[in-house]
Image (cartoon, rainbow, N blue to C red; front, side, top):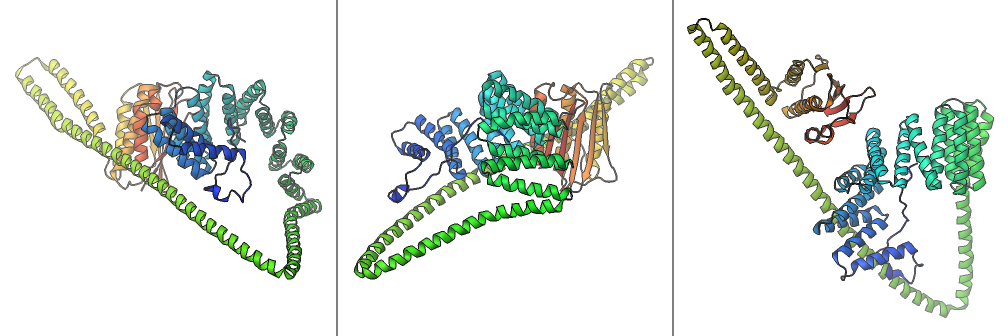
Length: 612
C-alpha cells in the first residue's frame, strides 16, 4: 500500500454538454471548476504566462488518460516556445502521470527521467525521484526503485520537507517488504512511523503500524507483530479505514497458512470476517468465507469447510439475486404503468393522438441533437487521435534518428581508431625496428659499446611492446569465432602486467557463441575496456573478475571488482562520460544491464546480450 503525498478528486469531462443542459442534472463542483478552467483557457484575452498556468491546472484536473496526456503535451510544447523550464518540468511530470494511468510504464519512466534532468535542485528533484522509484516498483525492478527512493530521501531530508520525506521512507520500506527483506523494511517503516506520529498524520501512522505488524509476524515475532496490529486497528477505525483492517488481518491469515500454522490462520480469518460483517464490507466478507473454507479443508474438517463454502456461494449468489429481484420489480412497475396508460388511452383517443404527435416531434428533435453531438464528438476525438499519432510518430522518428546518429558516431570512432592503430603498427613499428637494426649494425663498428647498445635496444623493445598494446587496444582483432575472446584475453594480459591489479576471465571454451556481426562483439569489447578503465581510475581495487555464460540465445556477462564500490567512488565513475559511453553502446546492441553493490563491497554489473 503506497501512500501518496498528493490526492486528486475524480472528475469527468463531457464534450458540448450544453446541448443537453435541460435534460441532465447539475454537474459536480469539480466539473464546474474544470469547465471554468476550459472557458478561461479558450478566452483570447489571456497572456502566454496565464495560458501556461491554465493548461497546467487543466492537465492536473483531468483523470482521463487521453485528456491528461493531450494537455500535458500541449503544456510542454507551449512552454518550450517561451523557454519556461518550470512549465516544461510540470508538463513532463503530468505526462508521466498520464502514461501511468494507461499502464504504459516505459513511457511514464521516460517522462519522469527527462523531468529529473531539468528539475531544480531540492524538493522538485526529490519529488520526481519518488515518482521514478514508484514506476520502477510497479515494473518490479527492485534495485532501481531502492536507488531512487534513497536519492529522494537524501534530497528531501536536506530540504526539511518532512511529510514528503516520511512518504519516501514509507514507500522504501514497502518496497523492501515486497522484496522479502524484512529487516530493511522494518528500519525504514519505523523511521516513517516516527515522522508521521510527530506530524500527527494519522493515516500514514496507521499504515506504518499495520506494515510493521505484518513484518514482525513474517519474522516469527508473533507477540510484537500483534502489538503493532493492535495499535494500527484503532487508528484505522477512527479513520473509517475498515477495509484496510480486514485486508491486514486476512493477509496474516494467508501468511500463517503458508507456514502451515492453521490455528493462527483461522484466528485471523475469523477476525477479518467479524470486522467485515460489522461494517457491511461485502467483498471482504466474501474473501473471509472463502479463506475459512480453504483453511478447514486443509485441516481435514471437510464438513465445516463445506459450510463456509456454502456461505460463500450463498453470499456470492445474493448479489445476483438482488439484481434479479430489482429487475422483476422494475418489470412489474413497467407493466402496471403500461396497463394504466392503456386505460387512459382508450378513454382519451384524441388526446393520445395529439400526445403522440408531440412526442414524435420531441423525439425527432432529440434524435437530431444526439446525432449532431455524436458527430461532433467523433470528429473531435478523431482529430485528437490524429494529433497524438502524429506526435508519437515524430517522437519515434527522433529516437530512431538519435540511434542512427549514435551508430554513425561509434562507427566513425572505430574506423579512426583502426586507422591510427594500423599507422602505429605499420609506420611507427617499422621505424623502431629499423632503428634497432641500425644500432646493431653501428655497434659492430664500435667495439666496447655493447652495454650502451643493450640499454638502447631494451628501451626500444619496451617502446615497441607498449606501442603494440596501444595498437591492439585501438584496433583489436575481433572478427571470427574466437576473435572477441582472444581480444579480452589480450586485455587481461595487459592488466596483469602490473603488480597492483589482477584480472581473471572465466568462460566455457567448448560453448562459445558466434555473433551475427562484428558490431556486437566490438561494442562488448569497448564496454569491457571502459569498465576496466573505470576500475583502474576510481575503484582502488586489487582484482577484477569477468565471467561469460551462454543462456539459450543470450550471452550473460558478469563484471566484478573488489574496490570501494559505487557509493564511495568518484562521481565520474557512475555518471561521467565513461558510463554514458557504456550505456550508449549497450542500447545500440539491445542489451539489458543491472548495477549491483555486493554485500562484501566492490562493484558489479550484469549484462544480458541477445546473441543474434
